Image 1 (cartoon, rainbow, N blue to C red):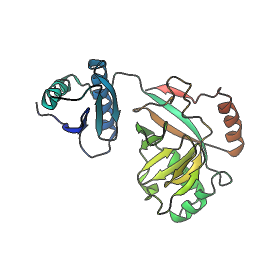
Image 2 (image 1 turned 135 degrees about the vertical axis):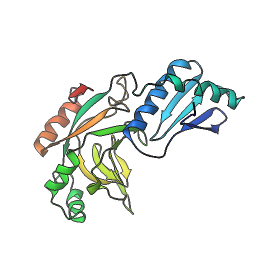
Image 3 (image 1 turned 45 degrees about the vertical axis):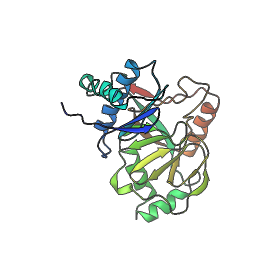
Image 4 (image 1 turned 60 degrees about the vertical axis):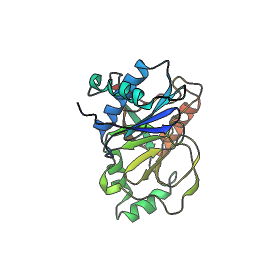
Length: 241
């Protein structure tokens, strides 16, 4: 069987496993399944397996002395891959406030798209977004599934800082900033949810392969949920999928 993956030396202790450049849910689930198999088979030999849109980075505890032997061992696992990872995935309902009092930038974005704010919100909350991977910042989710009508290149001049919970568009992606951060994406809304808390296990409740439904809320609801989240007693609604 011909491998659908390319194996590339990445560092003296790491191998990059890469597949097609396309960004698709099927590729995400295939990589998640492969990551799970690697972690189960080589738990004692690896430090971590890091996922991106179309690759896995396998980091070993020791220097790789025989690259081809390691690759052959990894390739032998491909035949056992399922179509989907066996771990449970969840659909999360994430509240987002789009009112311009909290996110004044949305007005300019709507004008750029020749839409009303209501039209932008309707398009942005319609899809079920797939969480492809988490990176950039602890708890920052890269979400696929954005309506093509809202796709917009990143800003030429990034914001020096956006607030925690900012929901933004960059290219064909949506992301949520889990902490205050510089940002080159267009901020569309703000979520009152705490997405990363180091004291929790796991620190980020959302995992790669989960799905996100953005739910529009008003400013009053935002502040009410924000208080609960700050007290550590708010958990977004979710269902197993």
